[in-house]
Image (cartoon, rainbow over all chains, first blue to last red; front, side, top):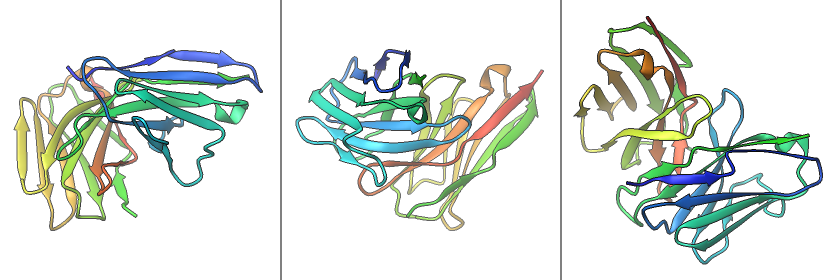
Length: 117
Length: 110
């Protein structure tokens, strides 16, 4: 149980184009999903918290107009990197939180490696 | 804000025990977690401990929590080459966000 998938697993795009990454909870409903960014040999940096049916909450320093997040259903959240630039190249990981209170551990997707040329 | 620190690297021989340490500054976290990340993959939840516990054992994994010293550790018994990965400790803050340590790269030598 508690499986989270991401699609695509890797993507290469040209500078100036937009890329959409999907995050799905396969066997549970997730009212809250999180989007992280990880640079090589570094820890995860939380970008935003996504709640189903409401606007995402972005962390300080993350451009909401550049990283568009939509949480349309209890099993799907999407991250769109708009007008991508080479500095947006990174490993993007989503997680889905089980439950709404208490332990509510997060289960992570396998990540999406984005390369912007 | 919360600061979570880990040593960057640990090398052990196959069959030995591994101990990965984590220190933190904010003691209000209710749950503390250990995640494993293999190359090019997402994070796998290994285990967690509730803040009112001192120890939790789960097969080869033992988690020790010293709240006074704000110190969390993960012991892996009989370490195998398949345990080579990056291990992250994480604390949950009051808004249910995870605060991650920098990660410890474990290398298991045959």
